[in-house]
Image (cartoon, rainbow, N blue to C red; front, side, top):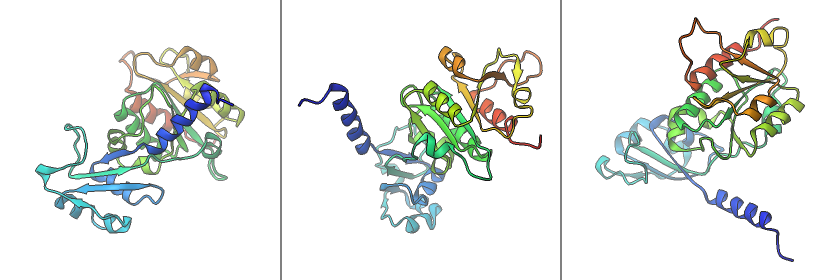
Length: 261
């Protein structure tokens, strides 16, 4: 019997994903990937100076580096990449499912960040750094129209990509509904909202919270807004514009921290 087209496409996508590799670059990103036991590492290209600066991370990884001269750096990177003499080819990380990651731990009331069409890898990398600092259990984007795992994202995340779960799902609204079924309060950041994070979370900080942020300019899509439990804003001093999405994520995560009621 001939397989349905959707089954064929799914199998093709799975095979393509298995073959996909990513080139990480920059000393922080490469060092943390070398020390990450969950990373499948394939090829390491470094200058002598970078090898010295990476120190024990190279022997600890068990890799044999390709050492080259700075002017003959032969890793296949964009010429504009600030690689600092270090590049590492890896397989993307597999963090598991939303259910597995977002259930949280016994001593932690989880916080999650969801990104609606945030495509700039520098913004996503900065959000991942904030998520790690404030203890979020995951950053979640979509498979399409969101920043994939790339060298630029890893460099902006400054090592957080190796430790902070970054999940990419097929449908953001469906994932929000899944989180709601797990007990999450889902809050969408919207500059035109009336309520603030503090007012909505009053008496509810013991609940798991998911913060949804949209791309700068378009903001949250209509279905995303309709799926949220509430729309909230970050209090600002007068009408002085809005925050960059990565700054908004940091402020929102701080505002949503669990505190004594």
